[in-house]
Length: 310
Ligand SMILES: C[S@@+](CC[C@H](N)C(=O)[O-])C[C@H]1O[C@@H](n2cnc3c(N)ncnc32)[C@H](O)[C@@H]1O
Image (tube, rainbow, N blue to C red; front, side, top):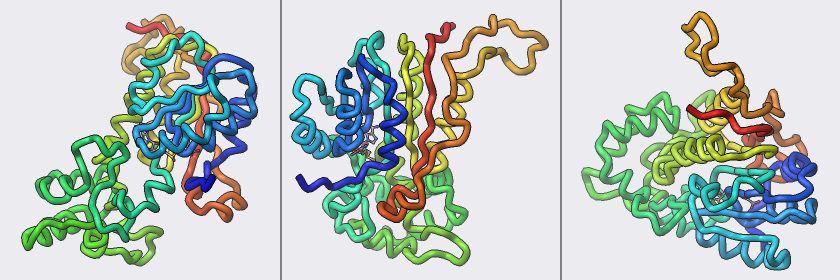
């Protein structure tokens, strides 16, 4: 089987779930099944529910994991809904390796890479919003906001203006042209080109990536889970910040407004423990083998009991 994606932090992920002897592990971002396969092999008594919004990934993973038979159930769905498909009582592990897969990046017809002749960037190709709509129909103010918030680009205003000027002549129809308009070259002193961050921003918008992450974390928080390890791998600071802050909130016993003089909430609201004070990052050897792993960060949390909800 020609596998189009190398799973990041594979050993670290497998180790994180190694104590799970039975029950269900949920892989929210099945992709090409690399993490799932390793988990199923290392934990022979568990079953796995895998989910992805990309139909190509789902079809690939179905074939790759077929040898595990009834131990695997695969869903073509956004991960914000996956927990609602499973009985939370049996869930002992949840993994999300959020971001784009190598296959999505490398297939020119998907429109994620600079060389692509289309402007698409949808992980789920049945959804209506494409990069083409964002680039050609969003107002300048909307583009500015996306580039500032999701690309964290210092030159958000100039670049949004440049896109709007370019499309006055006619619609921007390819990723290749968009990359030329915003600049592929690295500016002095910067690690990445403006095009990299513009593409990141548009991709986040098209796939509602931060909204999905927030909803996934909320669904985990509100499900009746206990004794469950949650592992989230993120690839940029916006996502990592959300995960870090959420885990901190989950760990807190007291959820009172910080301005109240004394605790009024009962002080027993902790969902469990943060297992990684600092995120786990790939070794230099892994980065050398797989340069796409370089910005990955894994954070782990153990849910011990259900927080009491108001
Ligand atoms: C980095 S890849 C995962 C690779 C996988 N861990 C493996 O070993 O092959 C990320 C996958 O998550 C999927 N994905 C991203 N956001 C998603 C979401 N909100 N819901 C479902 N799948 C999502 C993408 O389609 C992609 O296939």
